[in-house]
Image (cartoon, rainbow, N blue to C red; front, top):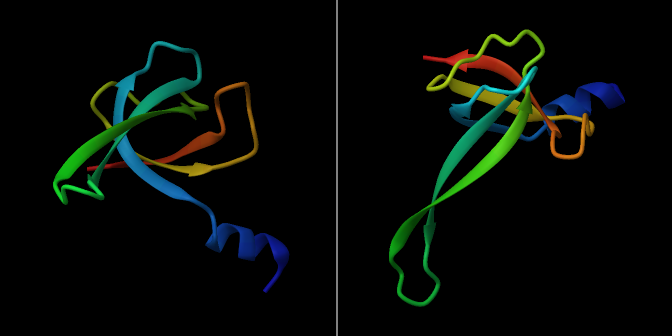
Length: 86
């Protein structure tokens, strides 16, 4: 197995919903996670926004998107959109 294949296998992949597509070649994706409070053991949701590179401007607000980590493309963009989920 070559070094590039190993990187692709270990590549961080996330899924979320597009919340903004106003920037050129950039979308903002909300990822919602469920966490457990350490003391009270109650579940709660945490939402985090990621700036994702969209080379062809193909994603719109409300689309479910899969994206992976990549090299830094700008100050805030270190993710690249891969595919649209149904």
